[in-house]
Image: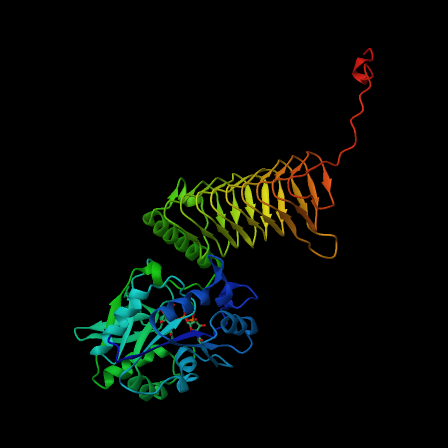
Length: 442
Ligand code: UD1
Ligand code: CA
């Protein structure tokens, strides 16, 4: 593959995916909190600048997803899916039909595919008009079988159309193929639908190439990369593989995990080397953690950016919009939402901090609550550098606690506290000697 080649990627995702037994279009089912088709699109953009999708116009949410997250993608519609070759033929205007044009076609239901694997296929187009990615699954079942001779790949036979002899082959079609633009545009109209499913099979292009005495390239990859997702059971299995791969990558990059098999990651989780993650920690989308931060067991983080050397957990819930600076401590049963917390500040126990801006060196005592919601609107709380909030304090927003101010334990603060001031809101304690009802004779 050299730079004079014009690399394009086409993703086929118009099928109905009936076997998922779910009303949601198959390719929107998530792996690591991101739709399957999103994984395929990410990969497509890693190998080429020009990406197109064939979608079903009835799958409105799929169309919206692609437009929102991958706006440069060309979208083609396939109204009545009549097979994979029929799908590609909807996208003919995406191709210019030249020999320098190298096109990879990927199915939208193989989210574990790797960039290097597709590059291998594209490289084969130096000599061959097309190339096919094969694999040997433990159970070849319904996969198309690759029929080879001493000349290489001769044809692909769909399981439904296969003879007993063909079915005995264990080398199967992954669905990933690459084509030279001139061959694809010329050969695609020749595909017919005389087969068990009455569908136009893209896989027929192998036989068409061979009839023209052209060679067809073949590479093989590990089954884990390409086993398609057709059922919810397969979705769960692919999720498991994705998680394991993602954890392994983090471990090798210098992230420490005591029980990696219990940690759940999102497709975009960013943990810097030197981060330490305890057991049973769940990362929702949009988390970035800087070096030296320790996240203890049973914490749940989403849409959060943590500074270096923070100490989080156990049992901490960090919701979208949480941003911390260095050496912040967020302890057990603390929930933070849409708040910034300055360097060295501590929220150690049993707190809710929402819509707040907390400065540096602040201490929020156990049970500090920002009352940010009045039933209609959310309001902000500002706590300036060096402030000290005693235990069990309610800060009724909007409110500001000034620099180095102190708020006494148990207070309900409804008015802002000036810098350096002490503010208390507490009924005086009444004490009646010897009135304890425990003194009554039993
Ligand atoms: C296909 C291959 C089979 C291969 C298997 C690997 C063909 C004819 N068969 O079978 O050889 O072993 O994948 O997983 O290619 N799609 C459309 N429009 C259509 C039909 C399908 O966009 O009209 C899309 C689907 O959304 C899906 C992909 O193409 O992303 C594959 O379709 P699917 O029905 O899953 O094909 P398989 O029967 O699994
Ligand atoms: Ca499939």
